[in-house]
Length: 277
Image (tube, rainbow, N blue to C red; front, side, top):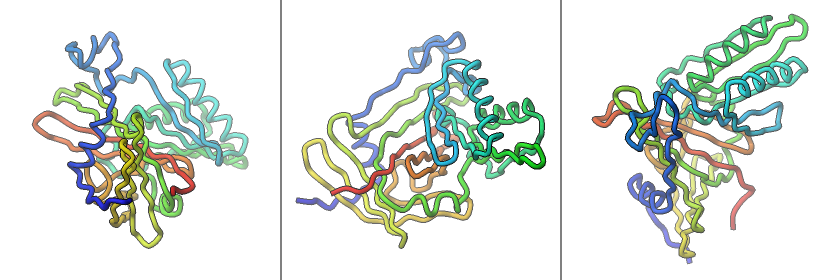
């Protein structure tokens, strides 16, 4: 028996927190333990990278633990583009940057491989998604970077059903250090959330509870010209920047900046499903 439930932002947070797993910040020389009382992790430092990337229509994900691994992957991206592929990548670990404050989309055209790699590194540090192609006639690479995916990239892919995977909430202090980073999930103890986006602008959320109950609610969704997705049924605020969207994966972020406690950054991840009963 279905129970109809109005999902408010507060209730969404409560439900997720009930099955959350807190993630401790990694210990680094600059960190001394993060939220274990050692001064925090500067947001300018990257302790690891989790890079989601697509070569043509093939999506992959890699966890990198060193700059050498990152350099090797960028070199591979250059090669993929040079051999006729469109390459797109995004570092999931940069969800606590301020890139989404700017709607600018930097670009580059160059025949210099090293210049391209330096540019890709700079865009990754800013938390942007990067798209690279290669012009065989001109012998040049062309790169585009964005904090929010263009609306025309999102519109057609979004329609369908998505399973909520997790939300990461990162608290950055006024001095620019990461105070805490928490991971919220729904499925560890048997729960699951599904969002069904329809072409007519309606959205249905279905929540399968850990006790076997089911709740549904209906709302609407909208996509702005600059790619911001809004719905009253999305957790932690109605509007989200779409950082990454493919037929397999949806990653979005938002921020609550300038609070008394500092800045709060949110990132949510979904995976596409063919449908639910």
